Image: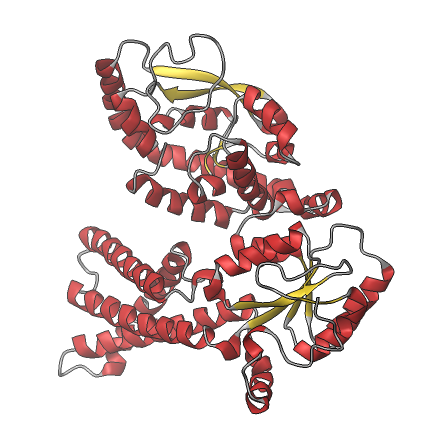
Length: 487
């Protein structure tokens, strides 16, 4: 182990730098924006560029005898319309997701998607309102917006991927929690987090290519030496008074101190459920939107409104799907199965039948497998497109389910998963959903490990559930359906 007294040379990326470069980078510390400030920067510049693009399109579209100011005065309402539409579609397409904002190719594809969706929306508006501005203007506005925003996002990615803007981290705890957060930061290198090393009282060597910097008693000295931007507490014991005071001293130096689960969920958008304490898990659920009656009422109204809007489509598709199921294989069109709902209350879930009638002839519950031979030909398409879940709207209408929520599991699987996965029953404190945070981020799972990962996503959803998050999940679900990513 490298002792503190003998480690005179900076480690990792600092090793081969000159003293002048180190001083220059320390001057840049004020510009190392946290996630919230980076998101605000992206939003502000996007709005500025899109407004510029709309103005430029108006200038190009204007007639020679009409002054620019008259054009702007006559069509001023297009500025807030385009700006609002662009920001909403950008949010839905993850353009303000900081962990992925440094991927230039991904940013360009997302900007292109926003432009296409905005133009399609305008075409629908133009079809019903012939007095809308000409399509040539709107195409010009979208083209300039996409070009300006793409160039800006590439510049952002280049700047914030630079070594000078890296977010330097020290992890307190060279254990499973510490290794988990170190691996998470390593798997997403473009967010530009650099782990300097571990701090731990135990005597260990290097782990994951990261050195052991010293003991907890040396934390303040290490903070002054390595100038981290953040200290992540990943200990697997209660926080003692001595370590607490050292962390407070580090905060006084301007260093952010965070718990391992908080940083992990910010980077990975899921909660490391196997690495949280019961007190942290309980606190994470308190005073959250799921306990607000107004929030619950709004979610219920949204469910009913969506069912009402979907009625014309259901009237057309349900009979066609029913005929296809009956033609493909003998047996009933619909299938019902016991599932666990809110607070573990059991109810019957309804689906289009996608398996043979003898799929579980021995009465033993089984997870569906990849290329499961029990699935019929029509059933395979229905499961991939998730059209087999349309009858679950009846469960939503009855109040047993919601459009968005954790996937309802069978009682047999719940009992098994409760024995293997900590806090598994937390997913039962909200209504199950047809789609959800786990469903749009993770493919169908049929193992204990899959159940753990899905619970990490479900816990995240329960903690941050809101109408805005539900709308975002519904939008992402459309992409999953179009890509046929069902089971």
